[in-house]
Amino acid sequence: MNKLTKIIAVLLILLAVCLAALAWWMGRQIPEKAPVAVMEPAPAYPAVIAAAQLENGKRIEEQSLRLIESPRPIPGSYQSIASVAGRIAANDIAPETLITESNLVQGIALQLADGERALALPVDEVVGVGNKLKPGDYVDVFMTLKEGSHIEKGQARLLASRLRVLSYGALVIGNSESAEENTLRKSSSSSQPRTAVLATPVEEVNSLLLAAQNGKLALALRHPGDTGMADADLFPQAALVLPPKNGLTQREKEALLAPDNRAFAGIDAATWSADRQRRDTVARPAPVAKTGNVPHRTLEVIKGTQREQVRF
Image (cartoon, rainbow, N blue to C red):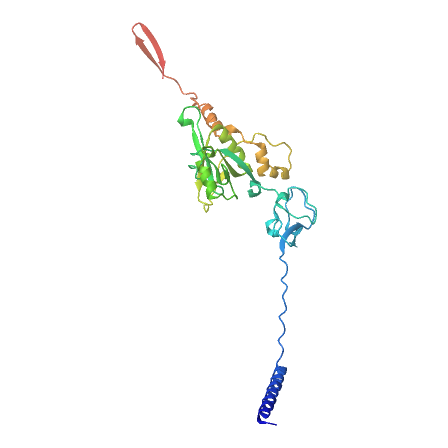
Protein backbone atom coordinates (compact mmCIF):
# COMPACT_ATOMS: atom_id res chain seq x y z
CA MET A 1 0.00 0.00 0.00
CA ASN A 2 1.59 3.23 -1.10
CA LYS A 3 1.44 6.53 0.72
CA LEU A 4 -1.44 8.01 -1.36
CA THR A 5 -3.66 5.08 -0.64
CA LYS A 6 -3.06 5.47 3.10
CA ILE A 7 -4.02 9.14 2.98
CA ILE A 8 -7.26 8.39 1.14
CA ALA A 9 -8.11 5.65 3.63
CA VAL A 10 -7.57 7.99 6.58
CA LEU A 11 -9.76 10.67 4.99
CA LEU A 12 -12.53 8.16 4.36
CA ILE A 13 -12.36 6.99 7.97
CA LEU A 14 -12.58 10.59 9.22
CA LEU A 15 -15.50 11.26 6.90
CA ALA A 16 -17.27 8.16 8.19
CA VAL A 17 -16.75 9.30 11.79
CA CYS A 18 -18.14 12.76 10.97
CA LEU A 19 -21.17 11.29 9.28
CA ALA A 20 -21.78 8.98 12.22
CA ALA A 21 -21.53 11.91 14.65
CA LEU A 22 -23.91 13.96 12.50
CA ALA A 23 -26.40 11.10 12.37
CA TRP A 24 -26.22 10.71 16.16
CA TRP A 25 -26.80 14.46 16.70
CA MET A 26 -29.73 14.61 14.31
CA GLY A 27 -31.27 11.57 15.97
CA ARG A 28 -31.39 13.39 19.32
CA GLN A 29 -33.27 16.42 17.93
CA ILE A 30 -37.06 16.62 18.75
CA PRO A 31 -38.90 16.84 15.48
CA GLU A 32 -40.96 19.99 15.09
CA LYS A 33 -44.64 19.48 14.51
CA ALA A 34 -45.88 20.65 11.18
CA PRO A 35 -48.17 23.69 11.51
CA VAL A 36 -51.82 22.75 11.35
CA ALA A 37 -53.88 24.94 9.10
CA VAL A 38 -56.58 26.71 11.16
CA MET A 39 -59.96 26.71 9.53
CA GLU A 40 -61.58 30.09 10.03
CA PRO A 41 -65.28 29.84 10.75
CA ALA A 42 -67.57 31.12 8.08
CA PRO A 43 -68.87 34.63 8.82
CA ALA A 44 -72.29 34.71 10.48
CA TYR A 45 -74.71 37.62 10.29
CA PRO A 46 -77.44 37.92 12.93
CA ALA A 47 -81.05 38.43 11.88
CA VAL A 48 -84.25 38.82 13.89
CA ILE A 49 -87.17 36.45 13.34
CA ALA A 50 -90.56 36.06 15.03
CA ALA A 51 -90.59 33.53 17.87
CA ALA A 52 -94.39 33.62 18.11
CA GLN A 53 -97.40 34.82 16.15
CA LEU A 54 -97.38 38.62 15.79
CA GLU A 55 -100.70 40.36 15.18
CA ASN A 56 -101.27 43.26 12.84
CA GLY A 57 -101.32 46.63 14.61
CA LYS A 58 -100.03 45.25 17.92
CA ARG A 59 -96.85 46.27 19.72
CA ILE A 60 -94.10 43.65 19.39
CA GLU A 61 -92.75 42.37 22.70
CA GLU A 62 -89.13 41.35 23.21
CA GLN A 63 -90.03 37.77 24.19
CA SER A 64 -91.80 37.33 20.85
CA LEU A 65 -88.50 37.64 18.96
CA ARG A 66 -85.29 35.66 18.63
CA LEU A 67 -81.98 35.84 16.75
CA ILE A 68 -80.69 33.51 14.06
CA GLU A 69 -77.41 33.49 12.13
CA SER A 70 -77.21 33.81 8.37
CA PRO A 71 -74.11 33.10 6.23
CA ARG A 72 -74.70 36.34 4.36
CA PRO A 73 -76.27 39.70 5.24
CA ILE A 74 -79.99 39.95 4.48
CA PRO A 75 -81.07 43.33 3.04
CA GLY A 76 -83.80 45.01 5.08
CA SER A 77 -83.37 42.76 8.11
CA TYR A 78 -82.61 43.78 11.70
CA GLN A 79 -79.49 42.65 13.55
CA SER A 80 -80.68 43.12 17.14
CA ILE A 81 -83.88 42.40 19.05
CA ALA A 82 -83.77 45.84 20.66
CA SER A 83 -84.21 47.48 17.25
CA VAL A 84 -87.52 45.64 16.75
CA ALA A 85 -88.98 45.38 20.25
CA GLY A 86 -91.64 48.01 20.85
CA ARG A 87 -92.36 48.55 17.15
CA ILE A 88 -95.79 47.98 15.60
CA ALA A 89 -96.48 45.08 13.25
CA ALA A 90 -97.76 46.22 9.86
CA ASN A 91 -99.35 42.83 9.15
CA ASP A 92 -99.83 39.40 10.70
CA ILE A 93 -96.42 37.73 11.06
CA ALA A 94 -96.17 33.95 11.44
CA PRO A 95 -93.59 32.31 13.73
CA GLU A 96 -90.11 31.79 12.26
CA THR A 97 -90.71 34.64 9.78
CA LEU A 98 -87.80 36.98 9.13
CA ILE A 99 -88.57 40.51 10.37
CA THR A 100 -87.90 43.12 7.68
CA GLU A 101 -88.76 46.77 7.24
CA SER A 102 -91.89 45.87 5.29
CA ASN A 103 -93.24 44.00 8.34
CA LEU A 104 -93.16 47.08 10.57
CA VAL A 105 -95.08 50.33 10.62
CA GLN A 106 -92.89 53.18 9.34
CA GLY A 107 -93.15 56.98 9.45
CA ILE A 108 -93.54 59.73 12.04
CA ALA A 109 -96.32 57.80 13.80
CA LEU A 110 -93.55 55.93 15.62
CA GLN A 111 -92.32 59.23 17.06
CA LEU A 112 -95.59 59.80 18.94
CA ALA A 113 -95.94 58.98 22.62
CA ASP A 114 -99.11 57.53 24.09
CA GLY A 115 -101.84 60.18 24.11
CA GLU A 116 -100.22 62.30 21.38
CA ARG A 117 -101.50 63.08 17.91
CA ALA A 118 -99.63 64.43 14.89
CA LEU A 119 -101.35 67.72 14.00
CA ALA A 120 -100.47 69.77 10.89
CA LEU A 121 -100.71 73.55 11.26
CA PRO A 122 -100.33 76.19 8.55
CA VAL A 123 -97.12 78.21 8.76
CA ASP A 124 -95.23 80.87 6.89
CA GLU A 125 -91.86 82.51 7.43
CA VAL A 126 -93.13 84.62 10.34
CA VAL A 127 -95.15 81.90 12.07
CA GLY A 128 -92.28 79.44 11.66
CA VAL A 129 -89.67 81.57 13.46
CA GLY A 130 -88.14 82.81 10.23
CA ASN A 131 -87.99 79.25 8.85
CA LYS A 132 -85.41 78.37 11.50
CA LEU A 133 -87.43 75.46 12.87
CA LYS A 134 -86.12 71.92 12.48
CA PRO A 135 -87.70 68.55 13.26
CA GLY A 136 -87.01 67.70 16.87
CA ASP A 137 -87.31 71.29 18.11
CA TYR A 138 -89.76 72.25 20.85
CA VAL A 139 -92.18 75.14 20.42
CA ASP A 140 -94.93 76.98 22.27
CA VAL A 141 -98.08 77.76 20.29
CA PHE A 142 -99.56 81.23 20.77
CA MET A 143 -102.78 82.61 19.33
CA THR A 144 -103.96 86.10 18.43
CA LEU A 145 -107.69 86.63 18.00
CA LYS A 146 -109.25 89.93 16.94
CA GLU A 147 -112.98 90.61 16.93
CA GLY A 148 -113.91 93.00 14.16
CA SER A 149 -111.71 96.07 13.75
CA HIS A 150 -111.58 97.06 17.43
CA ILE A 151 -108.25 96.24 19.01
CA GLU A 152 -109.74 96.46 22.50
CA LYS A 153 -111.77 93.34 21.72
CA GLY A 154 -108.78 91.25 20.62
CA GLN A 155 -106.75 88.81 22.65
CA ALA A 156 -103.46 86.92 22.57
CA ARG A 157 -102.59 83.95 24.71
CA LEU A 158 -100.62 80.72 24.99
CA LEU A 159 -102.50 77.65 23.77
CA ALA A 160 -100.02 74.78 24.11
CA SER A 161 -96.61 74.41 25.75
CA ARG A 162 -93.57 72.46 24.63
CA LEU A 163 -94.86 70.68 21.55
CA ARG A 164 -92.28 68.69 19.58
CA VAL A 165 -91.85 69.43 15.86
CA LEU A 166 -92.20 66.19 13.88
CA SER A 167 -91.84 67.76 10.46
CA TYR A 168 -91.38 71.22 9.01
CA GLY A 169 -92.06 71.52 5.32
CA ALA A 170 -90.21 68.68 3.59
CA LEU A 171 -87.99 67.94 6.61
CA VAL A 172 -89.11 64.97 8.69
CA ILE A 173 -87.76 63.91 12.07
CA GLY A 174 -85.38 60.96 11.84
CA ASN A 175 -84.44 61.60 8.20
CA SER A 176 -80.94 62.99 7.70
CA GLU A 177 -80.39 65.44 4.87
CA SER A 178 -77.16 65.63 2.93
CA ALA A 179 -75.45 68.92 2.23
CA GLU A 180 -76.34 68.65 -1.46
CA GLU A 181 -80.02 68.06 -0.67
CA ASN A 182 -79.97 70.97 1.77
CA THR A 183 -78.55 73.28 -0.90
CA LEU A 184 -81.13 72.17 -3.46
CA ARG A 185 -83.92 72.66 -0.96
CA LYS A 186 -82.85 76.18 -0.10
CA SER A 187 -82.40 77.16 -3.74
CA SER A 188 -85.82 75.86 -4.75
CA SER A 189 -88.55 78.51 -4.70
CA SER A 190 -91.20 75.86 -4.17
CA SER A 191 -89.62 74.61 -0.95
CA GLN A 192 -91.12 77.35 1.23
CA PRO A 193 -92.59 75.42 4.18
CA ARG A 194 -96.36 75.61 4.37
CA THR A 195 -97.07 73.19 7.21
CA ALA A 196 -95.56 72.16 10.50
CA VAL A 197 -96.55 68.85 12.09
CA LEU A 198 -96.50 68.94 15.89
CA ALA A 199 -96.80 66.11 18.42
CA THR A 200 -99.86 67.38 20.27
CA PRO A 201 -101.62 65.95 23.34
CA VAL A 202 -105.08 64.87 22.23
CA GLU A 203 -106.80 67.17 24.75
CA GLU A 204 -105.17 70.23 23.13
CA VAL A 205 -106.06 69.44 19.52
CA ASN A 206 -109.50 71.11 19.69
CA SER A 207 -108.04 74.41 20.91
CA LEU A 208 -105.43 74.48 18.16
CA LEU A 209 -108.03 73.75 15.48
CA LEU A 210 -110.29 76.56 16.71
CA ALA A 211 -107.35 78.96 16.79
CA ALA A 212 -106.20 77.98 13.30
CA GLN A 213 -109.71 78.55 11.89
CA ASN A 214 -110.65 81.73 13.77
CA GLY A 215 -107.39 83.44 14.67
CA LYS A 216 -103.72 83.46 13.85
CA LEU A 217 -101.08 81.13 15.25
CA ALA A 218 -97.46 81.83 16.11
CA LEU A 219 -94.81 79.25 17.00
CA ALA A 220 -92.25 80.29 19.61
CA LEU A 221 -89.03 78.25 19.62
CA ARG A 222 -87.83 77.23 23.07
CA HIS A 223 -84.69 75.66 24.54
CA PRO A 224 -84.94 71.84 24.62
CA GLY A 225 -83.87 71.83 28.25
CA ASP A 226 -86.65 74.21 29.30
CA THR A 227 -89.39 71.99 30.73
CA GLY A 228 -91.73 74.71 32.01
CA MET A 229 -95.39 74.09 31.21
CA ALA A 230 -98.54 76.16 31.64
CA ASP A 231 -100.98 74.76 34.24
CA ALA A 232 -104.41 74.89 32.63
CA ASP A 233 -106.07 73.70 35.86
CA LEU A 234 -105.52 77.15 37.38
CA PHE A 235 -107.97 78.78 34.94
CA PRO A 236 -111.63 78.28 33.97
CA GLN A 237 -112.18 75.50 31.47
CA ALA A 238 -114.13 75.95 28.25
CA ALA A 239 -117.62 74.46 28.22
CA LEU A 240 -118.13 71.10 26.53
CA VAL A 241 -120.13 70.86 23.32
CA LEU A 242 -121.54 67.47 24.30
CA PRO A 243 -122.68 67.41 27.94
CA PRO A 244 -122.36 64.08 29.75
CA LYS A 245 -125.37 61.82 30.05
CA ASN A 246 -127.45 61.69 33.20
CA GLY A 247 -127.26 58.74 35.54
CA LEU A 248 -123.57 57.98 35.08
CA THR A 249 -121.84 55.84 37.67
CA GLN A 250 -118.89 57.16 39.65
CA ARG A 251 -116.52 55.16 37.47
CA GLU A 252 -118.08 56.59 34.31
CA LYS A 253 -117.81 60.12 35.71
CA GLU A 254 -114.11 59.59 36.32
CA ALA A 255 -113.76 58.32 32.75
CA LEU A 256 -115.08 61.68 31.51
CA LEU A 257 -111.79 63.24 32.58
CA ALA A 258 -109.77 61.04 30.22
CA PRO A 259 -108.13 63.14 27.45
CA ASP A 260 -109.77 61.13 24.66
CA ASN A 261 -113.24 61.60 26.16
CA ARG A 262 -112.73 65.33 26.70
CA ALA A 263 -111.57 65.69 23.11
CA PHE A 264 -114.65 63.78 21.93
CA ALA A 265 -116.95 66.08 23.93
CA GLY A 266 -115.41 69.10 22.20
CA ILE A 267 -115.09 72.66 23.46
CA ASP A 268 -117.49 75.56 23.01
CA ALA A 269 -115.96 78.34 20.93
CA ALA A 270 -117.64 81.13 22.90
CA THR A 271 -116.33 80.04 26.30
CA TRP A 272 -112.99 78.99 24.79
CA SER A 273 -112.41 82.57 23.58
CA ALA A 274 -113.89 84.02 26.81
CA ASP A 275 -116.45 85.83 24.62
CA ARG A 276 -119.45 84.54 26.54
CA GLN A 277 -118.13 85.84 29.85
CA ARG A 278 -117.66 89.30 28.34
CA ARG A 279 -121.16 89.27 26.83
CA ASP A 280 -122.68 88.22 30.15
CA THR A 281 -120.92 91.07 31.90
CA VAL A 282 -122.16 93.63 29.36
CA ALA A 283 -125.71 92.29 29.28
CA ARG A 284 -126.09 92.16 33.05
CA PRO A 285 -128.18 95.21 34.13
CA ALA A 286 -126.74 97.52 36.67
CA PRO A 287 -128.32 97.15 40.11
CA VAL A 288 -130.98 99.77 40.95
CA ALA A 289 -130.79 101.27 44.38
CA LYS A 290 -133.95 100.89 46.39
CA THR A 291 -135.31 104.17 47.68
CA GLY A 292 -137.66 102.73 50.29
CA ASN A 293 -140.15 105.18 51.86
CA VAL A 294 -137.92 108.22 51.87
CA PRO A 295 -140.18 111.31 51.51
CA HIS A 296 -139.73 113.44 48.39
CA ARG A 297 -139.37 117.22 48.48
CA THR A 298 -140.70 119.55 45.79
CA LEU A 299 -139.57 122.87 44.50
CA GLU A 300 -141.71 125.24 42.46
CA VAL A 301 -139.93 126.71 39.46
CA ILE A 302 -141.53 129.73 37.78
CA LYS A 303 -140.51 130.50 34.19
CA GLY A 304 -142.44 133.52 32.96
CA THR A 305 -146.07 132.52 33.06
CA GLN A 306 -145.29 128.78 33.55
CA ARG A 307 -144.98 127.04 36.84
CA GLU A 308 -143.35 123.60 37.34
CA GLN A 309 -143.04 121.39 40.40
CA VAL A 310 -139.62 119.65 40.59
CA ARG A 311 -139.12 116.75 42.99
CA PHE A 312 -135.75 116.30 44.69
